[in-house]
Length: 317
Image (cartoon, rainbow, N blue to C red; front, side, top):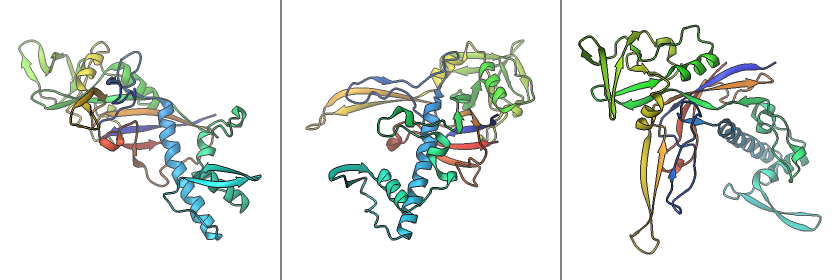
């Protein structure tokens, strides 16, 4: 029996999770997309990898502090690989592996609360596929709930579609009917058209709004969206509007010897202020990745060093 929960991600910077071809090839680096709506996702493997890496740092800090307490000499912080002798043979091993060996020799056991191998599964050891263990925490992919898009006169509205809202409803158990396509929040301002309701203009066309209702039950906790700035499109339209909303950046690779372009390459990303949801299942209770905090800033995807990937993540039981 699994204990179920979910997480809400709000992007605080453009988010790129997808192709990684770089400056050498000059390709367009596309994001991963859902196969039905063609909207951006974060795969479950990327979710688990981010949480594992965050907890691994906590485990390493615990090992270093407790080994120091028993008078084990710890190499300087910038030393990532350590030379050791095993049966007279000199080997180079990662810093964390060395810390684990020293902890075992000194009878130190990392608490399960900060043990990434306990919660997320033991990784392959020494090339032995049978050394892996099952993860106690299961992640599915994160899908969009609301996507910000430029809209003249607004200047930004958040859009979604019934397919994405149904997944959000399945994950969070919202007790409400999924809104009809072309439904807007009651306070959304649009251009009134005689006999046709309100019209919203986008870069490549317009949308005629057919319904209005209170959409506040569909605003995820912690997202801080304005209930009067959200619109439900149809499943057919969301892919086109999604592509208009993506953040795109063109970059160049210069020659090392002179200021001359060697390659162009492009990156696309989910824009800042996108809101995603992902389900979580736990085989055992007690998993607290943020300790006593409800939310934390984490980096997902690539290109963190040039301003991508920063997100606010909220965990709900």
